[in-house]
Image (tube, rainbow, N blue to C red; front, side, top):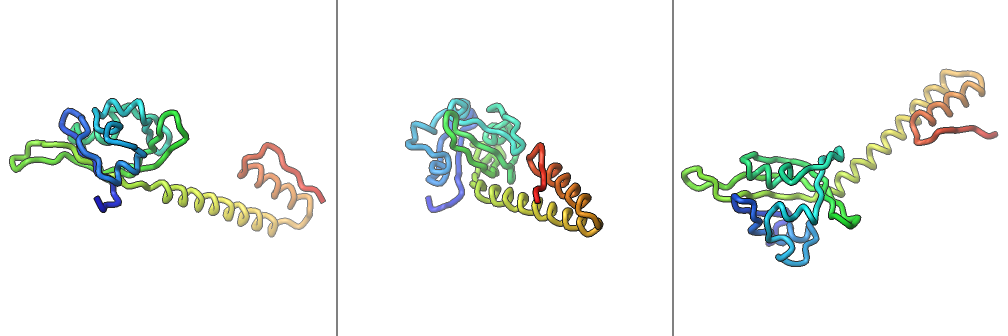
Length: 171
């Protein structure tokens, strides 16, 4: 119960058996009746997608993949609670737990909330893009002598790099 990583266990039929405290909190569940059910029934609560936004059907969800025998490691998934603006990015790991004879007993997944890290990475990428734009403009200015061509380069660079349709320089 003191783990910061979420842990979820399911039987081989996909019935969710156990969520540790971290997994319950990560998903925003209020009580066990919300999550101790069949995996397919969570499709009315959550929508999952790949980082590129491609929506996943329940059979593509991490637990379903583990139930088919796939081992997961650092699988990043966007999770959205249907009907709300709640959205997180989780990193999943998981595998089938097996007995001494190698027979599968249950599926176990681990979950880390990487939302804040992904948001920080996105902010850094944006800042790097702006720095690269400034570098490009500075170099272009250094290569030109007349004010008109400098303004043209600056405006064209801004129009190409920023979400704008029209730009002008006023003196």
